[in-house]
Image 1 (cartoon, rainbow, N blue to C red):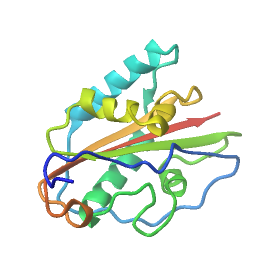
Image 2: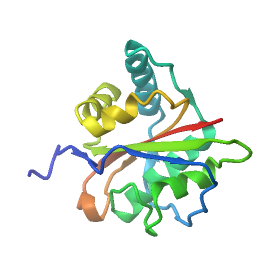
Image 3: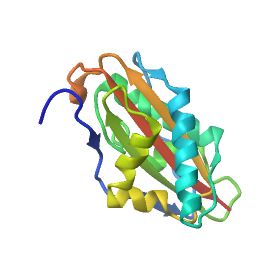
Image 4: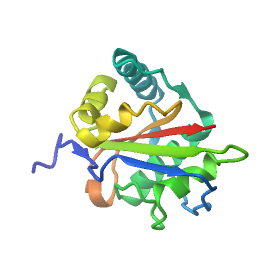
Amino acid sequence: MSRRGIVQLLLLGASTVALWTAALPAGAVPGGRAVPMQSLEGGVLADLNAFRRAHGLVALRLSPALSRAARQHSAEMAARGYFSHDSANGSTFDKRIARFYPMGFHHFWSVGENLLWSSPDVDAARALNMWINSPEHKANLLTARWREIGLSAMHSPSAPGTYSGRPVTIVTADFGVRR
């Protein structure tokens, strides 16, 4: 496995959890030098919604709450040098997302997450293509119940740990529905 230009996808399965009760908050702390990449986020949203529409599904609305959850997680992974759906403190992704996107007074709450890390020059089409080529991630993209999405694309010029001090772009997509 080469040190440069390697694309890593987290294949922990399509991370989807349906809950009928509110999840407890997690205490992850973001940090580091990662900078947001809004143009990449916008491109991923446009390409993902085109992909969903081509498969007869509704487009996803951008959720500020889910975007905050995604941004916090991308920044934490970049700063602490790890790559996982779980938070650095070990809490599961659904508990982390619930801090930002709670069940509230709804009767149904469900969230899912796709992650990727890649060389810094990844574009929206390539990011979406990586997810499409992973059966678990593709299934998450094509989950009909999703209505909202939060996206975060962060670039770190020198990420520790898993990233070995190399430049990296981390993308987090948090999917959700409340009704």
